[in-house]
Length: 508
Picture 1 (tube, rainbow, N blue to C red):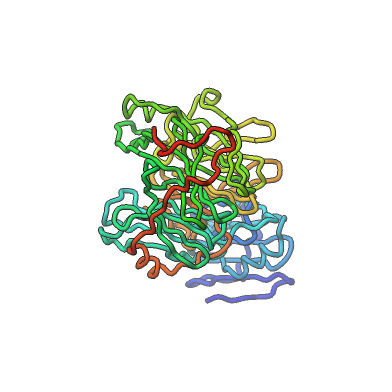
Picture 2 (cartoon, rainbow, N blue to C red):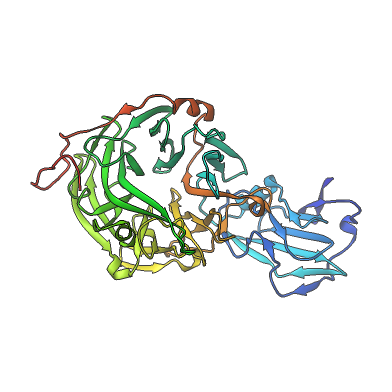
């Protein structure tokens, strides 16, 4: 039974469960323990958004009864008293506290009753003034993926615990794999994803309308792959890759993925055509495009072309580059090499420019670019103003950190990590402050605190979007079986600002 009481102007919530004595038994004489209580997930010493769902947790300390008090400077205190260590915070009261105390601290007091009452050191979190994007989109698939496994793309409302389906393969082996979802500038109304196997193509969702393109052309080495929408919503940079995958006996990296060859191309949604430039489609292997928020720079990675064998493809290291771009006349500037593998001793992958244009976050691994299976993959931050880079130590763990995405306001980061069990990839959120420093990351909150101990799915490519993606899953399921529209190369586009003309086809 849930009872709400007024006590000295403070709003209290008490949960009475089977024989508890309620408010009559005081905990004022409790014994203080000068240590934070062990809770799961770890939600201590965080900076959290005011619009995040409740940080429900499980108390990992022994006790026959527990009391939790949650409060800040303004508003009503939440009190939860119960025999269960699993703490489910009332969402309406949680919202009121966070919304009333932006920029202030949130206090969580935890008591546990054994032979007597014990009070632990107060957990203190900070409520950020800046909100987080409302939704997170990710792909879920099993740890060991087979054709019959459930696989899909889902969106999670970060203000609640609601997860809805964008696409799901409903365990039918003939249903295609859908991957590499991407958005234009965190805009939920402009989305793309690739359909593999049967019914292959690239699906574009543009302001409520679907279209599927066949992106394999005679002028490119492969269909479109890794994706970056230009902020104007009319252009998309794609990589085109000829990839090889093989399994190893190395426990640090059981799966290797490598480019044999790769290029970058630009797709124009208005004309359904590709174009490129000799500057981004060279004999080297260009990959993983990412636009600056103003659309004036395209960031990417590049490794030398090697032709010996698969080992030489994999062992190569990637540099971080960018090139200027003018969307008005579709012209490219000069390539700017930002950071090389000779400087770092490692291979750079997954560049992501911050919305304010000052930083680039990226991963580094020993070789190649595919970091999701690499236990040594860590996150690094390059300051474009100082040209200095550093390891983002607070974000990293002893195992894999990989794909990452910035919120629209640049104050929040979501990234993939296997730190919880070393096996499954989960999304972690972290605050990025005005000094260019990240704060302690925390796992995506779930309604049931022990959710991740029972869940065996990988959360791949977590991406922030400002609002809900308005896709009907059944409508999308039917649409992807339709025929594709063929894309082509547009030879008339002035793709190069130099006097050297483009040469087609693009080849190595």
